[in-house]
Image (cartoon, rainbow, N blue to C red):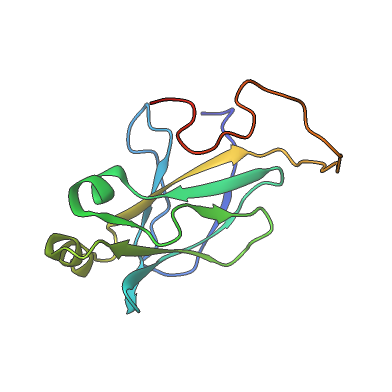
Length: 149
């Protein structure tokens, strides 16, 4: 992995675990719990890590597929975005559908457990140009569900 993107990480807690890819074909790396606290209807989980995401990149945080599929547990904000200029602790908030297995799953999360997955990828910046009209397409302004039945 000598051509791998170098990402600086600062450990903020002795319970923090530096992420790694769990398989040779993994696109995302796991984020693990260092601290857990119930806040409102969800579980806020500190990773105990701060990342220096390289300029021109973003860290996207997603739910682990088994959490949603098996327990109805998801990230409170759907997808987390860690910008390249953020230097604080990376945290996730997990929420659940109102089913007992989801609550039980969240209640059993301990430091060291995988709680989310993340990808660091290049992100282009955009220049926004205001115009009076957009080019025509076959779809036009047909909205939700208009491309398939």
